[in-house]
Length: 251
Image (tube, rainbow, N blue to C red):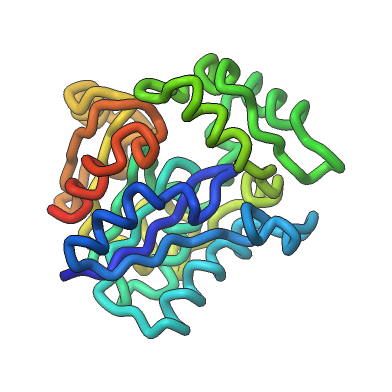
């Protein structure tokens, strides 16, 4: 059996993994669903100083203080950046990294760097107190390319009621990888086994973008990668939780 550490994307906490955690545990796995600093039940710990390094520390400290080894470290969406940073720091504790409708952030870049100019302006327009990035509406999520396929109105309302603002510093702080010289693809976790589970994009399209050398997918072309598909929207832990758990368990 495996040990899973599940890291949710923007605006979410460990609660988001409930539908995945239960079947994984029922199958005999050990599961740690994380809530990062400044979010959900840890919202009171957030501040303007909460940045990407804070969330990397959250993950590193969980693995270290719980004395976890051979971990399957799962990143959903925007958690790709802190998961990549944490794996770089303690690769000896990780068996595999799984990016769930997510991907690794290159060294020297911030999450905000990946957004087009209009996307960056959207984020800045939705800040409260200058550092809290408020959750967009579902309509705004769709307009920005985050599919809500598989979610009904009642489920959307339930999820939205529990979302909390994302600390802006987690979007603006560049990722630093150990000994990487800020070059993409380097760092302590460079050769760890990795898996991409694409949900919003067909796997055939992802393979085509990899072959074309698209900068967003160039990092997933190495021999350490395996590619999987779970057709649904951007939030598979809500839209297809049991299938998500089954696929993770198979990895």
